[in-house]
Structure formats: structure tokens, C-alpha cells
Length: 309
Image 1 (cartoon, rainbow, N blue to C red):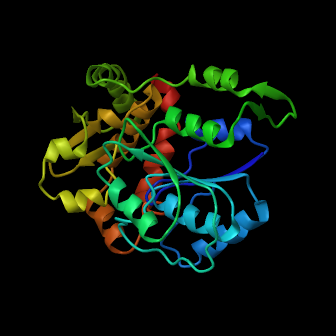
Image 2 (image 1 turned 90 degrees about the vertical axis):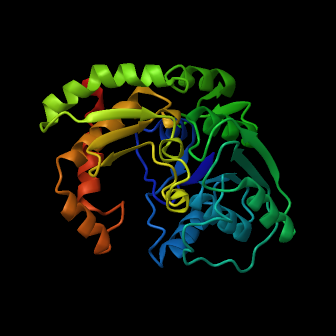
């Protein structure tokens, strides 16, 4: 089988992400590019690539869900959309919404999603006469790996998974084996234990001063209603470094594995070592998350996460 996966606006593709590992292990061909939605040519390229691949399913999250809906409808390919940004978008990318045809649409909504309104999404499809199936999951805008995997399995009716070796395995057995390596969502105390164990080692390895690390449920609970509209555009980060407070904030509700916690610590501590005025200037000059040199350096530092398990 073949599958396409389009990530969200400020996300990227990490080959060590459990979601990507699952796709690569269980599909013959996987199209999962790193996407710059602000590039005017992006939609046409995605459309041409997916048309050439002709996948069995297009999966999209947030902005990727919006684009997946359009491309799937133009090509009559079934889609699975996680919190699709058909409404409440932070910005409008250049797309072609002409010639939409009927296709099978499955949607998954996070019950506590504060970025995309599930009711607004349902209203959009109903107002446009588009039929769809939908379910909800316990969680927010960020999709847990187990929900991602189980939803794909359900939509494709994967009684058997055809692997790249040409062998077939019972999918329920295969996915259970895979999920043995995925931790359930962490509690605040378990996140704090991992920080206490790993962060001093990270500081020693990367250098710089050890920063105060605070653990909160999410950014909204930390800041309350102050600046809520601006926060909505940030897609509720899993972690951040505030140079004003000189504190690293970790949001435990977004953490679903030890790896995610350690990667977040590496990423944010790397930011503490960088010139914050230059960091801001580069964003002001037009750099985006996917091409900002300081962000790329922080992402690169994450690849050493296994040193701090």
C-alpha cells in the first residue's frame, strides 16, 4: 500500500518520530515531505507529487489536513484529517480549491484542541455540502502517536499489513508490537523526574548555564487568557525558552515519550546558548521555523537525545 502524510504549519518531519517509523515500516511507499506552506508553489508541487504517487490514503494534520482535503477531493483519494485547518487558520496558503470531487473523508478531533475549533470545521463541511465521518480523541491539537496509528489502521481496514519485504502480518499484532515502544502520556511528576535526571547531563554536554525548568500542563494554563489569540497561532508548543524570564518551560500534556521530553530539553537549552537579539532579528527578516539557522541548530542538537536516556 501507498500513503501520503502532510504535517502541520510549523511542524517538520523527523524520521525518528514514532508516526513516521510506523509509516515507513508498514507501507510500500510513503510520501512525507517537509513542507513550507508559505511558499506560493507548495500546493502545486504537493498536488503533482501525490497525483503521481496515487496513494491509498492521504493523511493530514492541521494545515496539512486542509491541504490534504483539497488534494484528496481533486483526485478522489480518501483522506484522514486530524484537526484540519479548514477554519481558524493562522494564514491562508496559496491553494487551488477548484474542481473538488466527492471522496471519502474521515476526521479526528481532539476534545481539548484550543487551536482549531471542531464545531467550526463541522460547520464548514456542512455548509459546503460535504459529507464526512468523524470521531473524537482525548487530547489537544497535537495528535498522540497511538491515535495516529490506530486511526490509519481503522480507516484502511488493515486486517493485514503488507510490509516492504512482501510479507504480510496481522496488523493488530504488528501495531501492538510497535506500541510497546511508545510510552503512554506522561504525568507532570514523571516529566519532572526525567528532567531532573537528564537536564544536568545535557548542560554538561552542551555547555552554558543550567536554567530553571518549569513544568506546566500547557501554555494556556501557564499564561491564562493573556494574549490568547497570539498563542492560538503558535499551535500550543510542547516546550519553549523565554529569554525574558530566562526559564525553560515544558508542557507535560504534550509529552508522550521519554524521547520527546529529552528532545525538548536539548532544543530549548540550545536556544539558551544563542544570541536572542539575533534570533529575533532573523525572524523579523523573514526567516521561518523550517529555515531559521538557530532553529535548525536546535533541531540538530535533538539528534543526540539517546545519550541522555
